[in-house]
Length: 141
Image 1 (cartoon, rainbow, N blue to C red):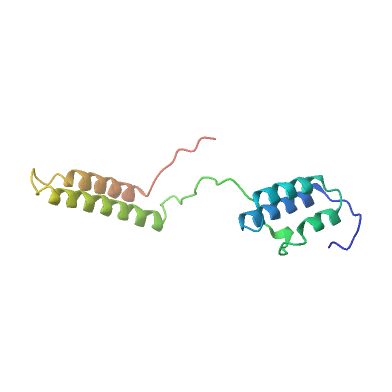
Image 2 (image 1 turned 90 degrees about the vertical axis):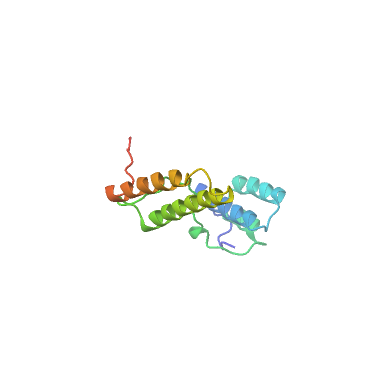
């Protein structure tokens, strides 16, 4: 309880409680119907006591620390590319090369080493990108 009966709730108070209810719903503490009902009551609440009553049977959280949900933005990669990105690219190249080689072997290893047409150009492309210092993106504002 807030300890201040009758203190009017702000839009920010309602928003924090709505976010906390969303977290409790995501954790499985509320059904969809309970969540929607409480959410309607949160936005209709005028005092802090009304907001507190909607949360009494839920585990306490510090509503000031509930993280805001943001839409994911573009991934920022350093100019030279990250070590993880290059490691992933090498794994991708190795996987494609091995799969092509295995298909070639299962096909009787006939018709020449066609699997190299996949592995070599892809490997050269990766090598050129590495020499050039990683991916370059045009940024349009």
